[in-house]
Amino acid sequence: MLDHLTLMVLDAFLIAVFFSFLWKRERRERWLYFWKVFGALVVGAIVLAWVMYPFPRG
Amino acid sequence: MTDGARPAGFPLPLLLALAWLVPGLGHALLGRRLRAAVFFVVVVVGFILGLALDGELMLPASGDALAFLSMPASDPLRFLALIASVGNGLMFFIAHAVGAGQGTVTAAAYEFGNTFLLTSGMMNLLLILDAHDIAVGKKDW
Image 1 (cartoon, rainbow over the protein chains, first blue to last red):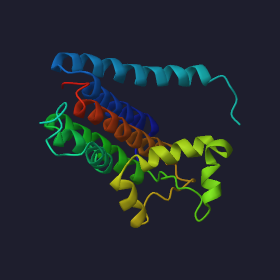
Image 2 (cartoon, rainbow over the protein chains, first blue to last red):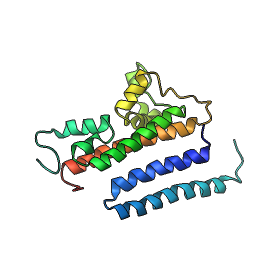
Image 3 (cartoon, rainbow over the protein chains, first blue to last red):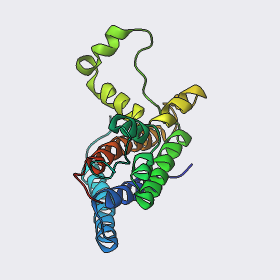
């Protein structure tokens, strides 16, 4: 199906939309919060993946 | 109206049960229609993606009440996953009724499928708490 990066971005998108509507009231606040959460999830996952890269599998 | 935004004569436990069964329904009943629609779409899309990716809806060991009761101690991670799975409400029961959500461990996206199923369940559980706060007047929007 879709590759893992796309799925990760999609998951981050859904979570960011959810929390921006759950915790923020105003439209502008929601947009700002959405990008913060979305960026943190996507960039954080990629950074974490690179940090783990030197470790051997299994 | 009674306390908060709860419609008059609408028992709080019933409201919370409906909020659990259908994502966003609690918010819809409280008049938060835009948020209800967004929550419904997000949770349902996450759930459907999880099933499409061969994710697994966790179930307690069948027919063994003792094993279920000891689950928090014996298998805490699976117990938490069970709570998150059941958090999907009506979708969880429908999926089981039609034989979906069995999980295919060898599928390439199995773990992602689980992630989508569990996050959608956890989001729905958070919606119940949010609906509660609106209903009792702790949150006015």
